[in-house]
Length: 454
Image (cartoon, rainbow, N blue to C red; front, side, top):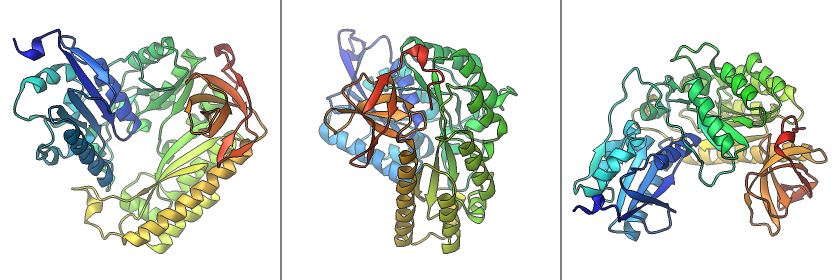
């Protein structure tokens, strides 16, 4: 009898997730769909496993490099294991991964969820298993309800996947396919499962969340979806993942006024504050729209958290263009930035443009990171002395304290040892080693969470 058919054999499977929140959700889907006819046991990445699965990211060249490095490290550690790369890198550049001798499998986005089918084949086949199909033009969202979100204090719910934009620097349209929306009914079902499991905060996530509903003809769109789930689950806290600035309009902002369980926080996929750079990127908005969205959100709430992604060193970025971005960020009420160095992606239009010198990119990145630190410190200082709701995350390297995250996405250290996922009310009173700290903390029962945010 082939040993993969021997039910007494335990197949140890380890997962490593690289990149965005979507990948985190997709990894949980894979875990939930492991084949029932094998005795699969999920182990940590550092343990000895029979199969190692890397759910990859390809947003930058550094992400690609990291994936290859991890695969080689695992091969050196365990010569007999099966090593698989799936996810965005596998979908966008399968030929690169297929050429790696360390790998036993390359699995595309469409095939990834069918782990119950390809994993048994991987275990018995001697040749490299490569299953990467191209996306069809009319692709539907494949809904898989999961029952848990391993090791996390908040659960992610993927409401949308893929993108129909063709930004000149981006490969995501190729890696994740056309935009497609999950049905409202299935989203509600998934949230209900997580609520029964005890989760008290949900992050709604997608590649292009602002496009939600267009492909399935659901006219209320993202605004209608958020309004509906916020009403159906009044004791659940909801947070939106990144959204385009031009999609932050009055209707969306009104939801933050209507629903106390919608976190006062937005993260904008901004990329630049220069109109000419945004045009070269082929982004669907201008700098004025970015600033208007930020100010409108900040006006809603005295502690509204606003983050943004910024790409530094986009091809042909001039001194004046960078200064336009820096000045706009400095003047607008952002609370933090995620600063990324531009990374040329193969086959994109931006890759054919003239690169900015590496030293200049390094200098500009340092300027924006320093600005981000100043913005974050100013925002967190404003929180001192008032009460804010927070969710406990994990222990930190500060004796006797845990790390918690407020509704506006500020990190705060709280005294004692709390169960991860506990909802608490904190009153920050200063900083400890540069981190906001609150010595006054009280637990919030479920019935008191709605409306508790200051």
